[in-house]
Image 1 (cartoon, rainbow, N blue to C red):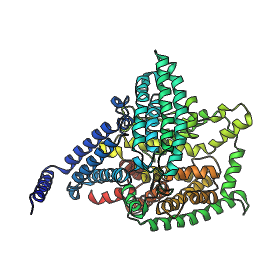
Image 2 (cartoon, rainbow, N blue to C red):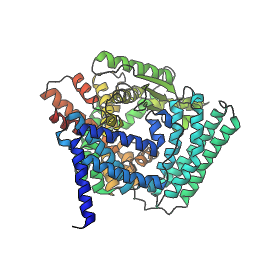
Image 3 (cartoon, rainbow, N blue to C red):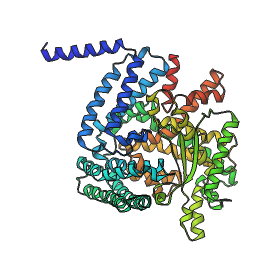
Image 4 (cartoon, one colour):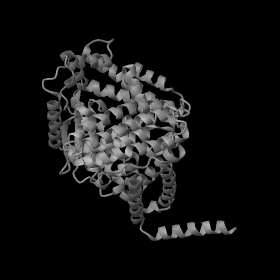
Length: 561
């Protein structure tokens, strides 16, 4: 045996011996702390998003050297984590270990194996504008308080984008197109923000100049992208093997891509038949579709009060309903503020959206944004058309606020495990919100007579996502074919269908996680209530106490109690 091989074996033996002497839970906690500290150093904007205010003025991590050194750090961290003797761990510590492995493995897949920081130019420009946007959202009540931090990030944007552009290689053409569009919107946002901050600054011209320089940097980034040699049109597809790895690590499921696709088609057929019956029952006609009924209901809806008032009232009613029903835990100190989107942010928000507090933020207050574009119209007909885009706001309120995203995150961000607070598995948090919508209809909490049809139609949309998710990443479906499926199957306009498919392409397994997550939740709920004689409240308490992790892992952990 040569000397080098002997040294490697000895080093590996010593590492495993030292690891075995430490309590696995203690070692895991140390590794988690190292991960958080290193990630905050590499990407300080990530640190501020978690609630660590000392990172608010900083923006970094787009350069090639940081990326390469980080990959080495993650590879070492993965070796150490896999070496922990986790099989003897109790349930909670085992879940922490499994979640931490998933966090590292998926990041390595994205950064080392797929090198998305090279092929997806949206990552860099999105991080740049997102770092400013995050501060604006967090300090919307008092922008003056955050002005210096925002200015510091504005000053850092030109170098951040320049370094990011130099790292781009063979970008996926669709992602280049979307990044260029994003640059235009980012420039407009920063220019408008500059005028807003200028009024708050003791040096107004300096503040406006920083904003304009940052805005022009997005133009330069877009110009640099246009000169890059493009990759192949379908290079967003990650292939079966990598997709199935993500299915295991993000969804906790040991399913093949073919099995998932088959399940998607089965769900489409099942939900379509149920929708047809529901539409026939509501209309008395056999030839009208659910999509047509929903459009008719939306176009007949005239709000009885301003949208902000309706959403505020709905949010308060949902919170009261959740508490009085006794079906959900509501932690002390949580709060949800319903607030209008500021004028300079209107073009960057959907009709309504939720912003959670940081995972480590002391004040756990969520923000429910209401974007009333009707206020921007002088013509009453056009204003009403915009307002009607909010049709079904009761279910939207349940999804975003109580008992949906806000309640779930308010509980998760109190978890004693720092690793668990970092978890963001869509199969849990999107499955949870879909369950909340379904339960709201079943309990008769939504007053709209068409609510069940709306909830089922949304489920059909999510069933199509399962098939499309698999098709895009296996190479069976082009972007155009996937959009056509949504137009034909769900009744989307071509523009809406294309926009939906756009975000599917860089997020494999996330689109399918919505409906599969709800079904996994219901499978586990039904078992616990039937076999263990649990109440629904007991199930909700137990499920939400784990954080946003795969349902299958929660189920497996029961064997360790």
